[in-house]
Length: 552
Image (cartoon, rainbow, N blue to C red; front, side, top):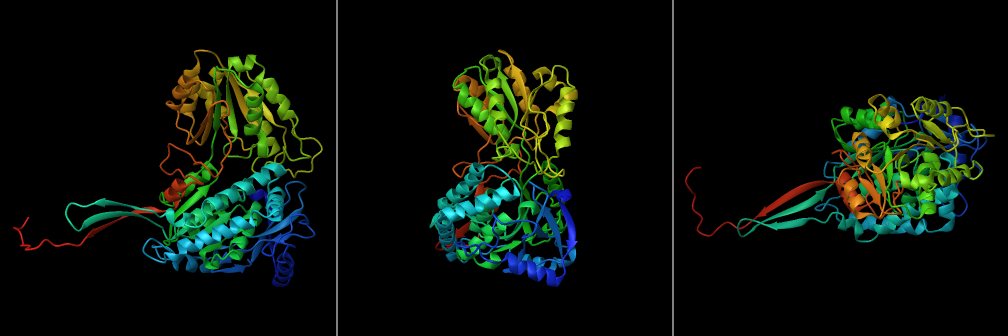
């Protein structure tokens, strides 16, 4: 199972003496941040970070480690545990120690709802400190290079989320309902119950935001969490868990394992694990769905579309948003704009020329474009060449490897790229799969449609497999409702400012059209993913002068 980029790492057994020396150095506190154990500004092959597992409330080393290479220069700058099958027993015991009723629920350990409200308040306070914002932003940039503004944005969204769930807001997540019964003394009560021990697998591209939002949601509802983060970026969520410990979280509430896919899969198959939330590739999501007998909530790939309506307006703004949606974070967002359906009126207004100019100002120097961690250069350029074989296709911009870079070959490094393919050629059965293949990098397909061809655009949307985000760029209400009524994407923006990217803390983010779909960030998402419904029927008053009736 491809939970991580295996080519980016090499197995290196670590002996006890070497391990001890490295661990002692790596665990030195960062000045001004007592809980931090890595300095992102000095991280290098000479001063690597040694990641740790966490089990039964204790940070643990592993018998083997993986060398993680710096995506900017290829230096081996992180040593990540490569936990083996033989080392799983403590994790199994930890999972089994949590009952199905969880660590707290509406009838047990209610004080823990208040405890997590307090922990969340303290964590949000900590993440308001400028030095902590900068610390996490720099950590993010070191492991998944993106612009400082994008990295800071991830920190800020995580903090906003925490601020949303301070105080009583945690127990409000467990709010139930009552319904009058059939006779005096009878009443039904619906409550939200945890699952007990749960699994969480998070991706590389948002190494703080996704782990924070999903982990905290699971904990709020009363679950014990076993989390596996991408090995390439594991230092970021590890630092956040250390922050939670600093803010009072009981250390045994969360276990962290760094391991290969099959090892994690073995743990997730343990009877104690009641459900797993997975964010990542569609291939792995489908594999987990089969292997875990459907006990999984997924937020997988998104081939995300944007439709520009016929009502042209604010071309400069819309061009800027198109550039941001397609190329920010080097296109490594599950919500990135994968295909642009531009009405002929926008093409005539010069929108594509404006997007090209914006794309070409992106540089490696400020990380507005950078390495892609799951796509190689040749893989992306090979896909481009395949598209250009389609009749009528043309290269709009990009299509070259980045100049003067030191990015290792196991990663990708290309200019922001767009390929035009005629709409009817996209719809051809022999081309559709190729044209709608998600490329997790700075790459998009662009097409144009004429007046009267909206149904062809909607046909393409209907035939796509993954329905995460979408944008309907139009203020025309008739046009909006036509598209909304014919599509199913779970997070759909509409209006002149519509975008495909953006997973802030103030609205649901997740796919639709799949019963396994997971949301993130909102009370509704937390309750859907991390709790189940339980009905408790109270029936207490036996009628006076009760007589046993005839048998029935």
